Amino acid sequence: MTPEMVTELGRQAVETTLLVASPFLGLSLVVGLAVSALQAMTQLNESTLTFVPKVLTVFAAIVLFMPWVLGVMTTFMTQIFSSIPNYVH
Image (cartoon, rainbow, N blue to C red; front, side, top):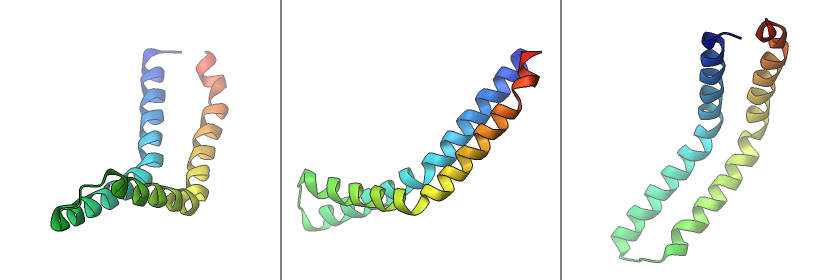
């Protein structure tokens, strides 16, 4: 296994991780900003007010995006497993 192969494998792994995590992190960011704006406008500084909507949003995103996430991860792992003979040389 050459250093270029290791670098490419690492790049693909990081790229897949960012691709899979982006819907959850993005929705959590949007909800967090919306709740923070609401708190700033109403001057409510309750810490649980930001936590509960984020948890519910991430749970809904998991339910919504899980088939897509499983497809991306399955494709990545299938590619890795099928490339094992190339990595051995």
